[in-house]
Image (cartoon, rainbow, N blue to C red; front, side, top):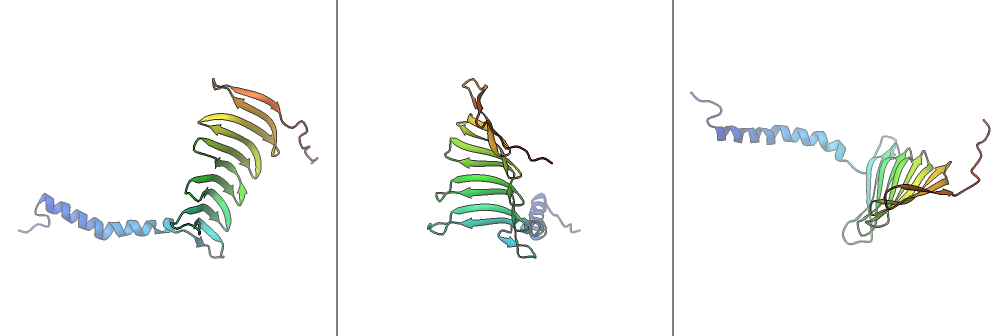
Length: 170
């Protein structure tokens, strides 16, 4: 009587063949949509992840990686220097800065900004993991500044602008 699997090693070989011939192509085909870059939607707008490269360098270096939805920046955008190091990271909502933006001045110094639908609400500098200074903004204008002491306590530096924009009557 002949059985399909004659030994344990034969079972393993057949399992590998089954995986490679039938299951692997299904997995790869299912991932193909998420791997597409620099695509347009049906209206001709940029959509999904777009990656561009610097032209003037001998080996390809990524210049920017930007996510688009319906032709507008939406989600994460990363910008790089010609040497390949990350320059900044921004978060967009329908082409408007919204959320965190980080500018990498060096490996130890980062500038952080937080936006709420295009208006700056906070920004500061972090050096070697410690907050150097920060500003809280009202209507996009710095209103209060503070720093972090060596002990990790926050110290207010006072107001930056004494005249803040007046809200228009509703």
